[in-house]
Image (cartoon, rainbow, N blue to C red; front, side):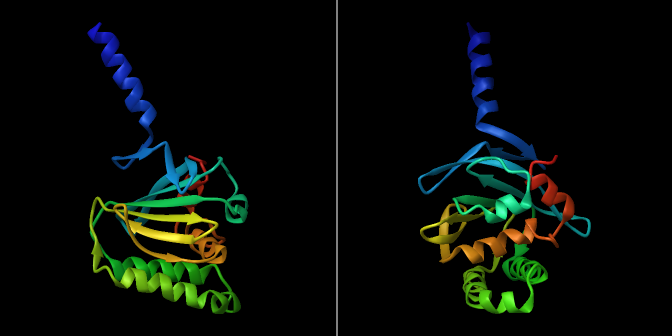
Length: 187
């Protein structure tokens, strides 16, 4: 009987987590608003020789094409599990540089107000610590909510900003090519 209980518990644990990346156990499913999203893919963001965070992409249904993800207007989440302490400004600068790398100057002009709102949210934090989780949740009705460890920090309205944000990892010039492939489920 004990063996049966242990086997049952192992099955529950294996169902709760879909994937483990760099020691981070990622949920198979998450809730964003009223939508249940599934893990699409995940990987480690490395800068120079340092692992910075595990990025996980959650969607309503699995997609292996960046174009399909970027054109999807439904709920989604990018979860960043920090693997080291990072100054919030350093992370923000990297995000802003990646957004700029994936947009023409005219597109950046249209995104200017949203990028400033995003920057203002990150400027309220001094640093994010190892173990923190930054969630970037998109809901069509309200835009992109930024939260840290489940605490909402701010919201940026509009689908265009969320698409720009996703291009950090899934754009033509992603922050890291192999991470893009992993987020698209191409392990």
